[in-house]
Length: 183
Image (cartoon, rainbow, N blue to C red; front, side, top):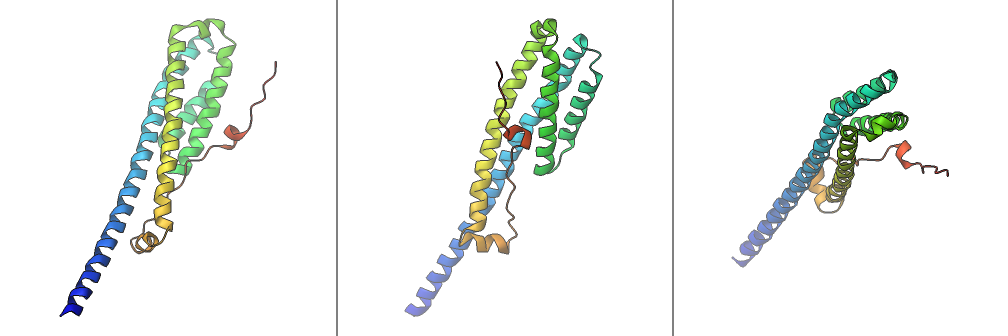
């Protein structure tokens, strides 16, 4: 009689452990999805600010057509990106296009003095800070999730139920290089 009770308790403990491991993986995967959606929200906000910024600059620098086209293409690429890698690539292209746009703005003192331009630039800067924070949070969340997918014993449950590791949001090559400052 005691042997059946002990076996039943062992089976219950094993089943409860499996349930907790499975639920932990589901929770971690959902946190990764939530963190990604936070990045997506900030990138959308940034993309929404860009047309206003471009229109403001166009008013002062209408002959800089190529710059505006590049910003528009990069923005469209970001809005159409579906995977983390696509998003990274599009985000890096948009960052480069915006650098060029701001370089053009440097040549127009009236534009730099415009309160509309200054406000848009401030909003974009604040959004960039939020994007950076969201990326950091996303990568921290991916790290915790990937650890659960790789560490024993949850890796057994992860492989049984097809929990795949998530990709980190990585910085583009242009953002890794150290800028040169000249005086």
